[in-house]
Every structure is written in structure tokens, then in C-alpha cells.
Length: 264
Image (cartoon, rainbow, N blue to C red; front, side):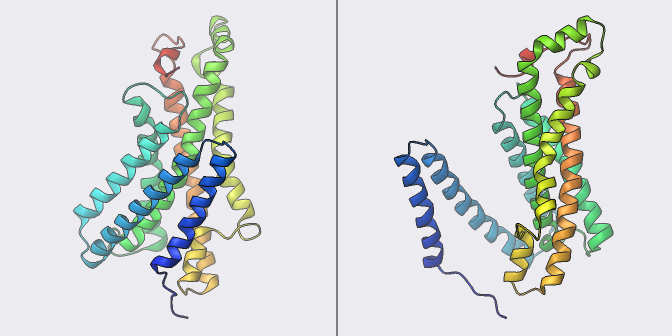
């Protein structure tokens, strides 16, 4: 079956529905109509530009341009992790922890998948690299932001209990160990739920896209399973790295709690 192409009118109908939702938000005084419309406009501009960029990259594969695009994706994801924190770390740590964690997890898992599982040549073929990295960064970003937000929020709320344990002679890792475990659980719950309900409650995005593009359903299911497993691994490793770095940042070299390092 040939791919059914969408025209401007088709997209306009979807956009009208978003505007209707914004109007409902205003009527109910939810206060999210502006954020909703800005997000919709941003997604339209960003996806349109990405489509043009990928069209150029697909026509002329060049490692330098692909590397630049992946760097931009990583930095934007790092900024979004920082922006979602209610009590984020001050200075370069605010963006650095999320960015470094995603680099260590998402990039390593993507390279492993391209070299070992998919075995595409060259490994930086944008048709495979960009979508795979984008899915890993997007989902890892969500897990890391939830974990970090839970870590800093809970540490702020339970500072008295943490300092009491330090006074009793516990080291910083034991004093904040329970908070770290709860933060990691919170960050991993979304991907665990996504895997548990895939194919029963929800039809994941990549599988849906491949089916709409005409791929055999079973082949689409295999690709989607691979993506879900890789996302789980990337999210897990990224959240562990972010929570460990973040929790260490909450204490100084003398193992004293330093909540002034996060914004109140």
C-alpha cells in the first residue's frame, strides 16, 4: 500500500483541535493555554526544520554535519532536563548533570545498537542514527528529569533527617541512600509501564509509524521491541548516573549537606 501523504488542510484540522483545547483551558482557568500553544508552535517549527535538515543529510551523508546535529540534540535535551526541575542545581551543574548522563547512556546504547544489532554501514547513516538517538534521548531525558527532580525535592524536604544521620556518623551515601533508591524508581516507572502495556493498551510510536509507512506489521513489532528494550537500558543507566552525580553534588568533601547548591 502506498503511503498516504498529509496536506496542509489535514495538519490545519489537527492544529484547530489544539486551539480548541487551549480555549477549553482558558474557560476552565487551567492556566496552560499559553504553554500548550507555544509547545504546538515549537513542535511545528522544530519538526519542519528537522525534516529539511534530514532531507539534506539523507542526500549527502557527511559525518561532520551529522555530528553537529547530534550535538545540538544532546544540548537541547540537557537544557530541557534542567528546565523541568523545580529545585535544580546552580551553575553549570544544572544542565551538566543531565547532559553528561544522557551522553554516557544514550550515545553508548545507540552506538552499540548500530554496530552490534542493526549492523548498518556506515554506522552514522542518518536514516538509522538520528531516529534511534532521538528516541533514546527523548525517553532518557524524561527518566533523568523525573529522577533528579525527585532527588532534589526530597532532599530539600528531608534535610533534617539527612543531617541527623550525618550527625550519628553515617556517611553521605547511607544518609541519602533511601532517597536515591526512591528517585531511581520514580524515573524508571514510565518506561516499565510502557513496556508492560505495549501491544495491549498502546501501540508504540515507532511501530505505528512503520505500519503507516507500509512495513509488514511483524517487522515493525520487532523493531519496536528492540527500541523499547534499548530505551529501558538507556533510561536506567542515565538515571543511575544522574542520581549518583546529583546526590554526590549535594555534599561537600567533608560530607556536609550543601542545599545551597540547588535553587530554593
